[in-house]
Image 1 (cartoon, rainbow, N blue to C red):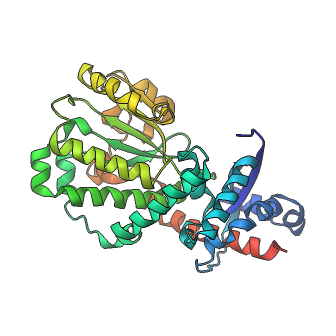
Image 2 (tube, one colour):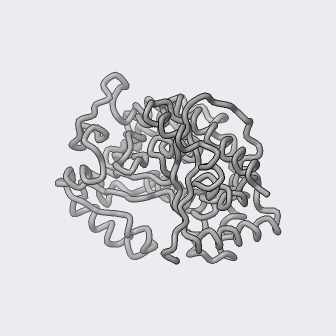
Image 3 (tube, rainbow, N blue to C red):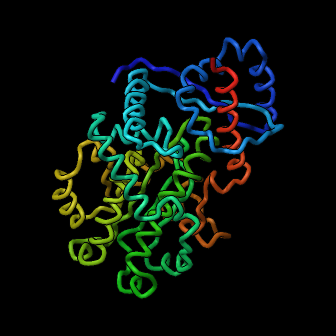
Length: 353
């Protein structure tokens, strides 16, 4: 891909005094005509349909900017892909989004025909699985009990503002887990969490970090996991969830730390690694029990749970893996994200011509 970049800034809303002062200077008529909002119009007008169904809300808050740096060559191929989808009636309005299309293109090495097949399969799967409404439809009321025998969850953000997903796979108690829930409900819960990341976590993190975010950092604790552990339901569950993730939520992993990897797991990893895409394996770092320094290079001490070498306990939330701590818990940020998208639409519509 070309190294040439186009720097795009889309507006978000901010209430702090520093942001308000910046807003007053940047939103003058002269800035709109010649500055960064004009650039946003030129680069974003082709995407305005992405937001056409969102209600228009007004805010008296100050205006700051979410920076979005795009390769010129990537913009061109995304637009070519977009037109190919439109021709084949494969672009529902909710997926008419630059970054969603770019993720799928990356997953198929920017081959438009292969990406189109992947995209069509994704739309069909969503229809059959009910993914569009799973956030509302699934009441996973057994989550607290599941957490006792399968510790996992989102907690905090890394130093780049990406959400952190933590899973203690080595402590999973399959027998107890299957008494609490079913494999189908557990997989549906995972899909619900994928959807929540796309709809809530990534947008909130983008507003918080003032930059576009659509990927996460994963910490996978495999202490106690050996060859005997990866049998029956565990293997079935991992494979099924991984396939759903790869096929329908591509390129949402920024990096993964596999920690407490003992000799047994390393044997498994050495056998599996050659079967994985090199781009995927390049995102994964396998560490032993001296992993804290590596994690702290990527994650602030206050964002890392105490049991991983950080200082956070989320004592009032029942523990870090039950807290779902992150910018996405801030209702103000969620409102800001809605208004950010609407504001971009209004700027595009006003300046298009």
